[in-house]
Picture 1: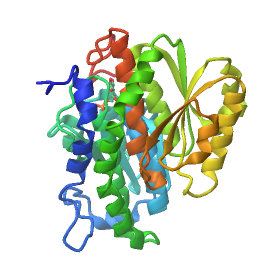
Picture 2: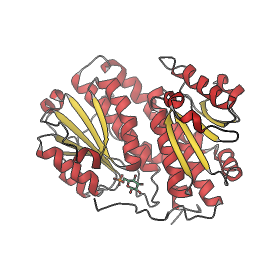
Picture 3: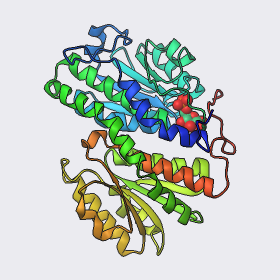
Picture 4: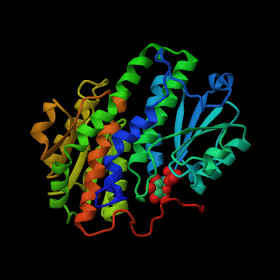
Length: 369
Ligand code: BG6
């Protein structure tokens, strides 16, 4: 049932092009408009939304952080992301004009469910983005947008993460379309870029031997750091989480801009640091900023492992290792940049002899608060 793969995790990593493709499937009409039939919330309510709050735990919360950049950019609706358990117990400001988006692979995470109930009690509408049909969170939510990643067996989430990000992009584009804002004319183009992602994810997977050989070399690392900016930041957090969860290595993700405010003190000779580099074609000099972060840590002895776009030559001089991902719009890059980090964690944990599908102390779905 592992389809010839040594673990469910590896199988699920390899299923990611399909997971994203299936999540996109059937959601546009012949004119290219996005149709989210499942979004059974009155259009007038969705038009009046003045704040979005994404609630989730673990990997799903990092998908939420990615979603936030996209939703705010496309919809111009203020969007917050909060760990469900923190949201629930801090008396959050939520009302009828708040749209709560609950992200959960299993649909059974108790912390997320309690946040959903709390938001509904305050009058908010809740959209659940879930991978498990008929589970509790989508049943209790006002509407459910299902990811179609297929069953995820490995405890550490991989394909559900990419599918959650994809579904959240669709929700953002749908709201932009519905509200007719200035990004309305760009929606068709972004959808076309999204449709191109499964093949690009496959191209990243096709380079996995290179990532695996580095993972084997680094199997005795005591600590691995991850840096990213903008959407690369939640990717860095997810890369670190994967390594903690299955390889039991100390790992931390940082916002690259935060480096000089503290984390750079951790850099010493030989410290491995993954850096997620934004597209050099993107806006706001993000790329140049991250390249200078790579220089700063390299100068202090870090071993830099860089995830960069094909054709981005600016990183070559400062990178000890470079993994390439195909070109994509900045907001969609997490669907590509996450993949080498998943492969790295899976291979490193395997090299240490751990059971990657059943990491110690963790459960696939945590149904207690
Ligand atoms: C954790 C799982 O306990 O729950 C993580 O080990 C997962 O992998 C998190 O990301 C949230 O789960 P779900 O089902 O709500 O997405």
